[in-house]
Length: 268
Image (tube, rainbow, N blue to C red; front, side):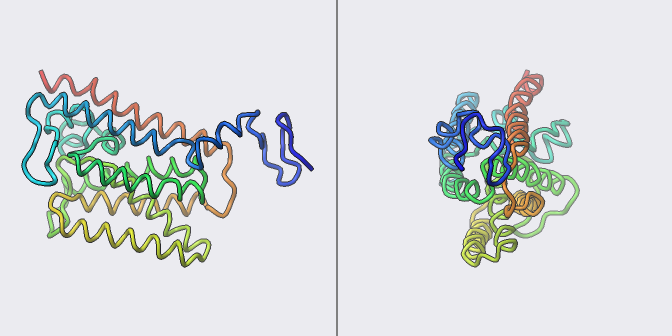
């Protein structure tokens, strides 16, 4: 039996508002991620540009990873996380805002390429709402762990908590953790191989490149894995998942605004 625009439930599976009040075709045109990838890339690019502007002539240019890097003053203002912002300045909400900021041209390019590759695949399996939940919350768990380690745990080789830390890689690590959880839940060897390749790449990057926040990667990966197990990709996405996703996304972006408003007092 065909399902109409005004039908309250699907006659086959019982899903409520199956045609989303007639907006389903428009939403499908945005892709499986409902436009999340271009939104993330656009928002991160705008904020990266703003941090460069607010660096006021202190833009870093030395070294491959420091090409066009904004100043600590600028990234602090816009919501960089780490032991200093979270515990010294009391800016606990920066564990959400830090995922939208980047420390250099190569940094943002690599992270946005990873988001472009991973997010649509996760949205295909989990649904766009649950993908957004995993992305935003795992970023917070990653930077929460890094900030805690930077304050309370001793530095080890290749493993030190961040005093100032930022970037989308904690959220990206969460998406990788979600792929691993899906592979275990579904028995997919392809997904397991996919997750393993990305996880190995994260480890190699963390060992070879200086300044990589491996605690943030670990916290993001663990957060994404646990969230994926809780959200169960083998069950259909519900409308409340979309509502929670919008709340998570709104809170994440609001944290950037709060960071700027609160951070002005430290820059006087």
